[in-house]
Length: 157
Ligand code: 5GP
Image (cartoon, rainbow, N blue to C red; front, side, top):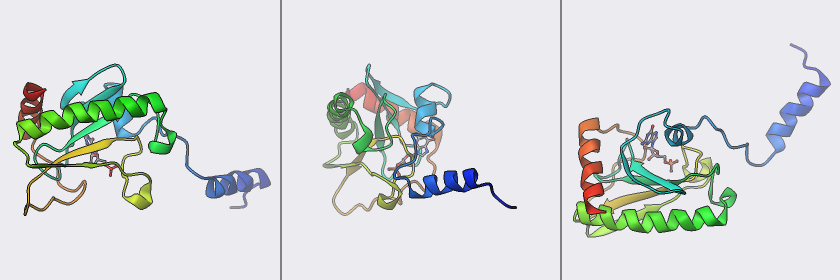
């Protein structure tokens, strides 16, 4: 099929452009709008925290800002600070609920860094020496287990 000059221009614009626009249909945007369910553990006016459905360790929790940003570079500084505050609060509860000797925080920016969901989020993952993490975003956890873990974290908040 022959493409018009205008169409070629558009395609080249996309190829050469830096980050793509925020996709309002990413799964975390749907969770924020309540279109997709999640096991919530904490919410305030600027953030939401919920269980990762493919945890790398029991208690793996995600914290997201209520702001449309793919990554740290797009995030409004007020929401960045709210994200860190909420992460600190939820991390303390995760540590207590799972008696975790260590905690790993992770935040991936861009496909090249391993990011798979393009709404910025912090990972909170309990760690113990000598216990390897499961692979990233691979194995779905049983929903009853996630529900129980969310309740444990909420009780520790
Ligand atoms: P990223 O790779 O972008 O840093 O992390 C995305 C995380 O979201 C992964 O750990 C993955 O397991 C998790 N995830 C993917 N889809 C869903 C979903 O539908 N619900 C929840 N709660 N977590 C998800």
